[in-house]
Every structure is written in structure tokens, then in C-alpha cells.
Length: 108
Image (cartoon, rainbow, N blue to C red):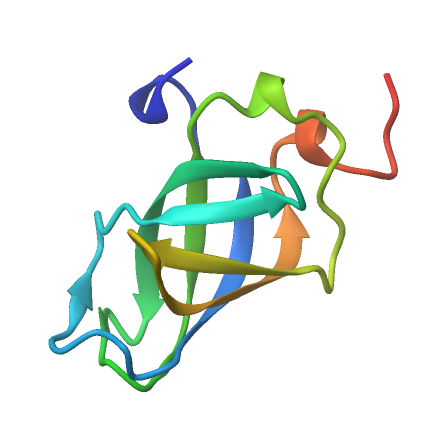
């Protein structure tokens, strides 16, 4: 499944660390360290505010690529990093899991 094949996987807080030189907009697709040994692409959608400045906190959703490759790896409160190439540009805090396949509390 690609990024366009399913809805958002989680509601999150994006925290940008100032590494980016310019703002990020909905549709931004950095890589995410979803597990200790697995980096995957995720599409950001920003809700409040709708633009992510280089050193800001933004409420939104994230849609991961191929969630079936890393099932049951998310829980509310989990923090994961996101990056552009080797540069970590921020963190994501999971608030609510929308895709049951990724929910660590469900093992079905």
C-alpha cells in the first residue's frame, strides 16, 4: 500500500527542531524512524497551524507508507524522529492511533 491507498494512520503533534531553513506545508514527506531498525516515509497533514515553521509545534495527522511492514508499533505518547536524509528535522508525538494495524495494544 502506498501513501495514497489509505487514510491517516495517527493524530500527532509535530515538533520541528529548527534544522529546516524554510517552512513545511501539508504534503511534506520526510522519513520517520518508526521502529529502532526501520525508517519509512510518512506524509504530514497540518491542522493547527496549517504551516510548520522551522522551530514550531503543529497538530496534524500522518500517513505512513506500507504500515503492514511494521504492525503494532505505535501507542499514544510514543515519540519518533523524522528526517531529511541524515538530518533530523523534528519529532512526532503520537496522540491517537487511527489505523488499528499500527496499534501496539491490538494484536489481531
